[in-house]
Picture 1 (cartoon, rainbow, N blue to C red):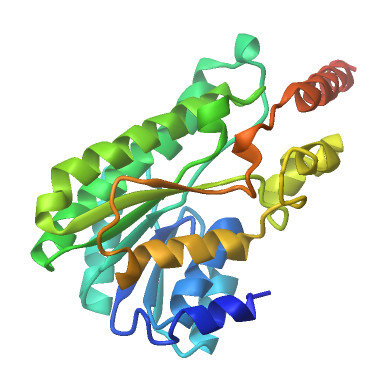
Picture 2 (cartoon, rainbow, N blue to C red; picture 1 turned 90 degrees about the vertical axis):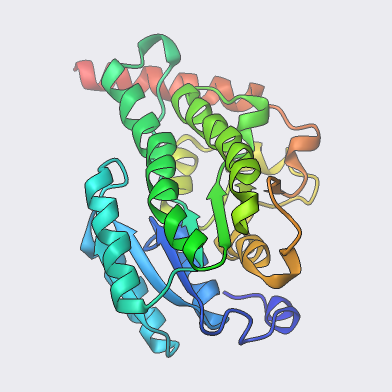
Length: 285
């Protein structure tokens, strides 16, 4: 549910006349971001590998009175991304914001992680972010500037058990964020990142956490005493896209309730290890 305080803080027409392209924008955190930007006036281009993943969000955006375009494309496929960007520009007239949200993740110990598993996550998260950013660059440059917001993660700074592939890929995205902020700043393009903590109301969180009974372990690491919501992550993205952030670039904004101040993953690591070993035994039989 949208926070009414945020609705009062940001004008409803904050992004009126602007267009945002959001990868992975149909589900989870991406859905929250798509709806938040649409509520504040932006038209939306959704990009995902599967049309079915985008349709419910696209319908919700139409219900807000905004134009929306659902584009099937894999962020790992540069030609497909070029076509998607071209179609968004043709049908929506412009692109002002890019949100690189598409991601992939699964639990696996680094010692047993397959080459294909490593490559799949790095290709989606890091290479995909670069592909879409590079494809959108001339559009933003020629349009007089714009903003890119990349979704990273708080365990870039801490490390996390059984997620070496995701953590390494997201760390690359953070460095890419800073590098592009320096390189493209002269073109009026701001590049920032939002690093969520654990987001309670997403399928990914339920799959990775609730099945191993980790919610309480994570919650106890958060000074604010609760997990994030997708809307709270979306609010941070909305801020970085807004004129209020016009002089902000190259930053990573943590939305983690303060967990990074002193949280650790020791207890979580033991539960994940036990869950993984039990899953292996079950598959073996």
